[in-house]
Length: 470
Image (cartoon, rainbow, N blue to C red; front, top):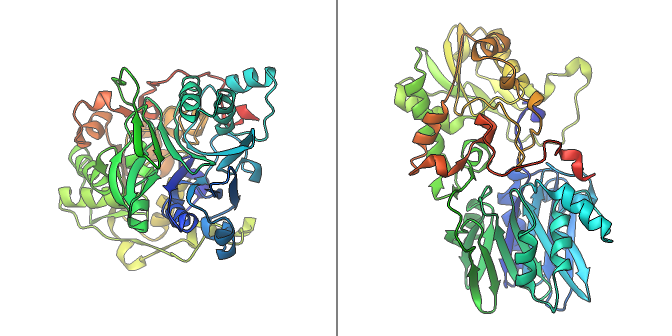
């Protein structure tokens, strides 16, 4: 599988208030969220002495943290972060949580999303004397926060800071006193949920992390909500008036979130199955079996097979012992990266008509390689069904395809793509079908689908790119 041909989200965040093993449980929370970011990981811990200790590094969670690291930073409350960069470079200085020291006190923040006006705010702050240590948009929030931190009023400082930022943000903030604070943007682009663990409270990008640490799911944060977790319990501050229209990222259901998570009130596994069922209704075709390429499209493929009555098979077997850091292949072995991860069941594929279910096509190179592999194995016909509409527009809210030229569907018709990918037939799920299959009332007012239809819910600078913060 070509990793560069898959869409990527920015990160996952986790926070835990008042637990004797806060750092260790945050480590496991990040483990559950590893799929949301593989470039760097970090944990910040408050010891309650006006200071925050941190450990972070480049790579996967289990590579960054050793037991001695977790024991060194053990404290009462903690927040954690796993990152994939959609703004800022992939370097250790940009690894989160980001910690700032102000008037003898420390604060840390972990951020999921993209601030579309961060580059403008950064210029304004620099003109007024701010000095930036990183190229990540999350630091802009911290500068605004500290600028408004008069008299130690953390909540007022947060409210004034979020009034200035625009775009997608789910924030988890740690104060030196051990308070853990969660913040959602008014459009609610990215998920953030509240859980309870033996009298402690937990915040996480996804509920699958609650399952791992054995926390009880309480609820998801509302759009624009700020929750303060401290010795008084959980205090909620909601915007007035409440946002009328939400912009939940529907691609969280299609690709990003783990299937065992519940986000925006819906289970991801069941949503993907529903998309597959609707896809079978919209684009039926005769074939011997339905198959995914693990793990993309697995659950949509189950739904397609159930609805169509065509058998579901695993024509490709994934090697689960291959990480992201195996030795890079030479030019003469450039297809090794694909073959080391997936191996075919040759006898199943030969002389068969096959329906491949994919969750998306972004740049097209991975899909082309996969189709050619099936042809080489003797497949009689290869049909492809995609469980979302074509990606034709860049995303500015936390997904890494930030230019239209990266999206193969933006320049090719479905017929042209069929030929380009070497398929017999190709069909995408319609926007209408995707929304109706969600089972949400008034889905047009519920989801952001800008990457499909170009209707952006939050205005942005057309010159905004991943490199703008540099």
